[in-house]
Image (cartoon, rainbow over all chains, first blue to last red; front, side, top):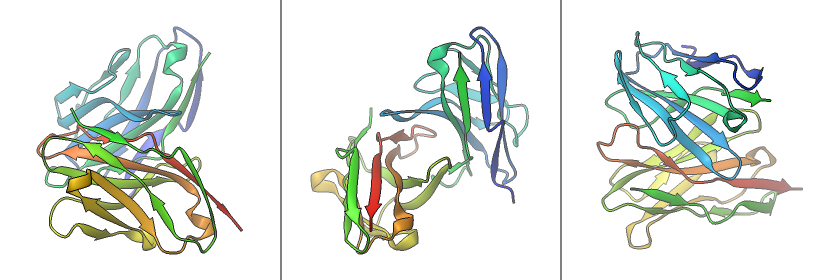
Length: 112
Length: 114
């Protein structure tokens, strides 16, 4: 199993540009989540999904959209990037019967 | 809402010395508790977790943690650190039946000196 994969590893955007951060898992996990990591703030939950077709907001959802059309994929969309969205983004997944989350390697995003 | 406090932003220890990283949580019921480690430029790796039962839990890489309900703490320990333990450590609390409400502390950066 590849586990949780994320692409790209690093991205530079200009303010106002849009982009999609990709996340995929091959473990057939029901739950998937997106976090952002900022210095001195730990990880904060952006959006999560409890299964295909079901998503919900986390702690810091503004400026981000998600969808879950398949069990494997959970893309995160930035419709109009802002400098405040400069961060490291982590995707995570877990099976429905287990509380442990498995994290991807992260995407480092810089918005100029 | 639950919260996690890691009071030490940065800790430096000598190789071979013992280590204790502090974690305090706030939650009205029994939480799920986790310790994750993040090496530079890497994702988060689970070290250990506590759900119920024995309050002293063993994890990977020789780490252990003890859940103390009376002190709302879940401190991470290692009897003898290795240079490869240099990383950032995150404590996290989850809500029983609370789907994805995993709340992280702000992390403790561990530096190992020869």
